[in-house]
Length: 289
Ligand SMILES: NC(=O)c1ccc[n+]([C@@H]2O[C@H](COP(=O)([O-])OP(=O)(O)OC[C@H]3O[C@@H](n4cnc5c(N)ncnc54)[C@H](OP(=O)(O)O)[C@@H]3O)[C@@H](O)[C@H]2O)c1
Image (cartoon, rainbow, N blue to C red; front, side):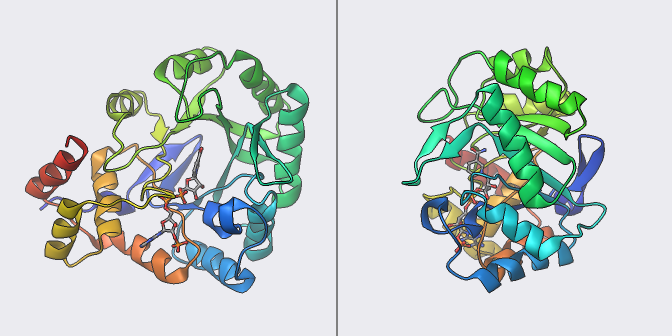
């Protein structure tokens, strides 16, 4: 039986991170807006993440806004040397919780400084430029102007490395002509397989692929076949969905989000979940239905 790849690591910029990371978005209040329902539990989750050896946390200053970054700082600063914090830019929150595009040079520069201040850092290791051309998923459009701004902030030493989020293959190619791109963060999971070819192409180029909504996000994955496999493996459907992603390609880095230590423990236990070839084929078929 193949060994679980969950404990392997993959390069993210000039660091290597474990393939099981953590996404902090769920720590903000309902609708990713306002404070968490349980502040103490949010801090406990973050401390448990790092205590478990996770060294890759995904965040954004627009979660809350400012809420998750402040929680991360309160729970974890001074940060462990090997911890890679990854943020994203491209939106601002309205007073009503709306998500509004923010790609001007002023907004991006302000965004980097806001992230640094709220996280208590002088340099943020990775910043993703999150494209917002389409309402649902990636859509074509030039990213040259905003990416050039981020590349300048990188030259100034405020950003370590740059990634892209919610982008097409064309935008990734355009991005790579402007500056090195170390990761791509798009929606992808067991049933949402639009990026299958892209993942393999990025793997060949040594670029990390970080699926958001790995568990389905606001619409949790539901599949009778997934349930059946999980029952057979004595695991939960969510654990099997994460394990499948780990087996999908070595450049896939997981950032499942949770606001509970119980779910965090289940997600980290995926490190012990082995999938044989028949099971992987069975799970693969779900996305082709
Ligand atoms: N670039 C982008 O545009 C973008 C967009 C969305 C998200 N992201 C990033 O991607 C990360 C992951 O996405 P996500 O958090 O939205 O979605 P997700 O990881 O697919 O799912 C999170 C949901 O699953 C639940 N959950 C977590 N672990 C579970 C378990 N073991 N069993 C049952 N339910 C479980 C969580 O609820 P509980 O809190 O109750 O556990 C939450 O409702 C985010 O944290 C964020 O950092 C990026």
